[in-house]
Image 1 (tube, helix red, strand yellow):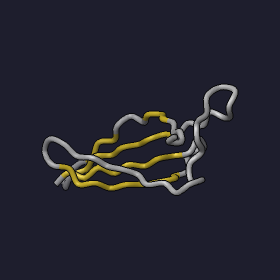
Image 2: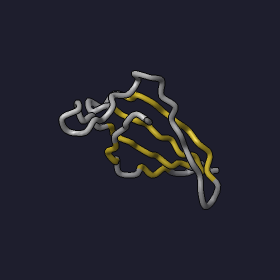
Image 3: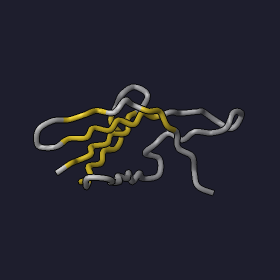
Amino acid sequence: GLKASSSLLSKDGKVLLESVARLDASRGSASFEAKPGELELWYPVGYGSQHLHTLQVKITDEVSSCTWPSTTTCFTEQP
């Protein structure tokens, strides 16, 4: 079956969090769970730094693999 491997990277390329999920033919989901202080947060201009993280996703099956282009994301605290 299909498997999705996701990695969340720091700006210097260090792997911060990883997740592996099984996929069916049409959908799937993956999630990360971070402890307080594990990720550098993004703050609005004037309130702190704007840290960005890179998300990489690789889909594999028994025969081949496909790596999606990386995307950049940020995280904020929930009120």
